[in-house]
Amino acid sequence: MRESSNDLDTVLREQTGYKFPASHHFVVSRLGITLPFVPLYLVATAVRVDTQRLESELSQLQMAEMAIQGRSYDKRLAKPE
Figure 1 (cartoon, rainbow, N blue to C red):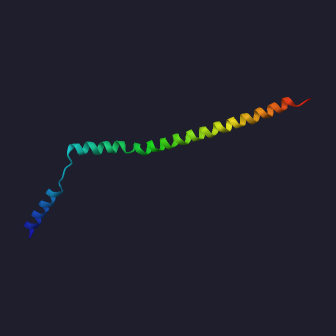
Figure 2 (cartoon, rainbow, N blue to C red; figure 1 turned 90 degrees about the horizontal axis):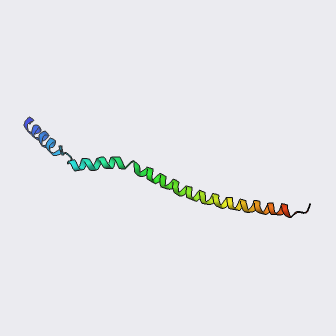
Figure 3 (cartoon, rainbow, N blue to C red; figure 1 turned 135 degrees about the horizontal axis):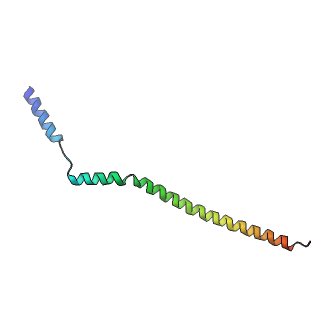
């Protein structure tokens, strides 16, 4: 009974003793290095888009404010004193 269990252990050890080729180690290490940068890139892109949108809204509001201030300044000049 012991002989068959040793043979079975040996066979199982040989079957599960697969080693990665060197090229697999290279690919896995490169993936490990680059994958953390994907979320960083996505966040930076989202922030850039939001910044452009907010800058556009700000410039529109500034132009509207300047137009309102210009009209009120013109009205003060037109008042007879």
